[in-house]
Length: 246
Image (cartoon, rainbow, N blue to C red; front, side, top):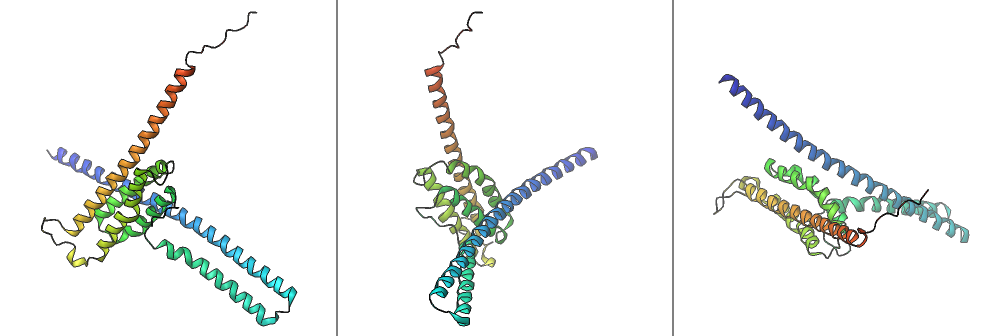
C-alpha cells in the first residue's frame, strides 16, 4: 500500500511538472515572438530616424547654398533633427500599449501579431487561471496566423477572428482590469465570480479561434485533395513511353 501511494504521488508530481513545463514553454515562445516584434520595430524606427536626420541635413545644405545660415541656423537644424527623432521614437511606444485595432487595410497576419503582443503584455495583470487560458490562446496563434494569412480580410471566418482579437477579448480583459480587486471574488446572481467569468470568456474565445483555424485548415486540405483528384483524372491514364529498341 505504501508503494502504491508513493507511485501515485510520483505520477501526480510528473503530471504537474509536465503541465508547468508546457506552460513555461508557451510563455517562453510568446516572449520570443514579442522580442522579435520589438527588434523589428526598433529596426524600422532606426531607419525612419536616419532618413529624417538625412532629410534635415540635406535641407540645411540646400538652404546654406542659397543664404548663410550662421550658428543659430545650424543649431535650429540640429534641434529640428532631434525633435523629429524624438517624435519618431515615441510613436511606436504609444501604439504598442494600445489594444489591437481593426482597420480595413490591416492584413490578417499583422492583426494576429498585434493580438499576440497584447496578450503577452496583459498576462501579468491577470489571475493564474486566466493566465493559463491566455497561454493556451497564445499557443494556437502561430497556427491561426498560418491559416489567416492566406485568406482575405473580408472572409467571414477571418472577420470573426479579427473581432475576437481586436474587440471582444481585449474588451473582456480591459473591463476585468477596471473591477476593483476586492470585488473580483464576489459571486453574482448565477453564483459565478468575476475571476471565473474572465476565465470562461477567455476559454470561449480560445475555442472559437481554434475552430476558425481548424475550419480554414480543412478548407486548404479540401482544396489540395480537389487539385490532386483533378490531376489524377486528367493525367493519371498516361503511361510512360516504352524504351526504344536496342
